[in-house]
Figure 1 (tube, rainbow, N blue to C red):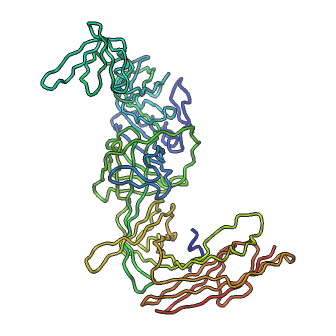
Figure 2 (cartoon, rainbow, N blue to C red; figure 1 turned 135 degrees about the vertical axis):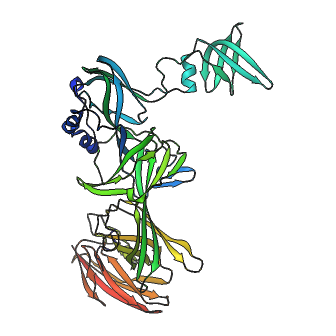
Figure 3 (cartoon, one colour; figure 1 turned 120 degrees about the horizontal axis):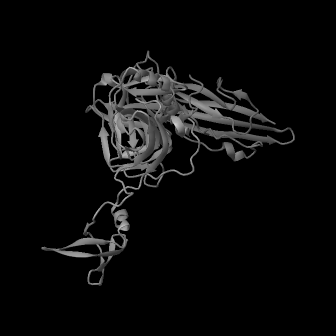
Length: 532
């Protein structure tokens, strides 16, 4: 048996703007091939295409995100927690840039953009430079509009059933839908509820979409291909694995069908249409931020469809793994999009492993010996059930598996339905590594652990402790159980007597492998001595 069974750059604007921001590794990597991009444009722009690319990074705790039909719940629910992830967005657009110095508006950016990460380059005029940048995010709303017209004349149409009453006057106040007007006759009126308000114009400074406003200097001018990149908060991804278990040659073996889906949660305040989608799996370090942004309600569930041959392609990328979707994807704002990570693997061999760990891995974690006799007196009858398989090409897998939640079902032969039998979470798992999935507690296999003796000799700095462990099989078939014990009192210990040979797993753990026939009970005894 496996001894580890239950262990669980800088991005620049060209020209005078200089260094605008230090982006994350992916942002810097995207901006690096500047010379190659410029070389492509020397013979003209025929090869250039406008479009969007988005690379999404996740810091979600595996299994920590749960999406239901009413929206976002669980760890990142309605309690204001930030979305655990971010993205690097890259766009190539055709824009009209004035010759000399002029203003350029770059619209349709994510509302949660980090303006300090923006990078700009003109592929048509490499000498073009951004002198100044403003990020405008004062978006139009009823309250903002009305507040801009304080002390100005407006018209309010009141619905009086079959008639409309038109009121014209000076707006004195607007608070929470309550309007205070001074009419043309001098009377003060307070209006509440749903009113039809007519305003003469859109006030200066209010915009309908988040906008980057650039002061650009260009010697060429005219239509130019412009490449822009930035980071945005409010977007993340995670993986869900769906396994179907079937019995194998005996009670300890079976086969699995393994499917994996990627879920992308987008609450960044931007929609990414027909984008090249990339996902990064791995722990990418970022500098801490002072304050996170609040979450918003999710109102759309979008399921992806398309040619399976154009699915995700995986490759090593620095010390991480990069998954690139082979077809364009649209990621709407306020939505969760689901895409198949890889085609389902059929008939993956697996083992069913039963583990009896009565005391639990209670790390002593102290600077002194634990002399309390009751530390070892607890007993548990629960035997844990695990499935174990190898993420190898020979087994039908072999792709690095991103961290995520694993759900396991089993086919009921009586009616052909799939029944849920347990779930667990896994961390990032490279190829050719073992995957261990905890399903629950065995019903018909039980254990019993008793502390038979405890002797403390303070003068000799020694503790002797003896345990008896019983394991019973109430099934109609034979089973194998791993009995695991942890030496939690102190780091210096030795088993001085045992009824069966054990295997030392690490500096604190030993295991016994016990095979039980139907209806059989077996008893293990061992004595351990701690010294300090």
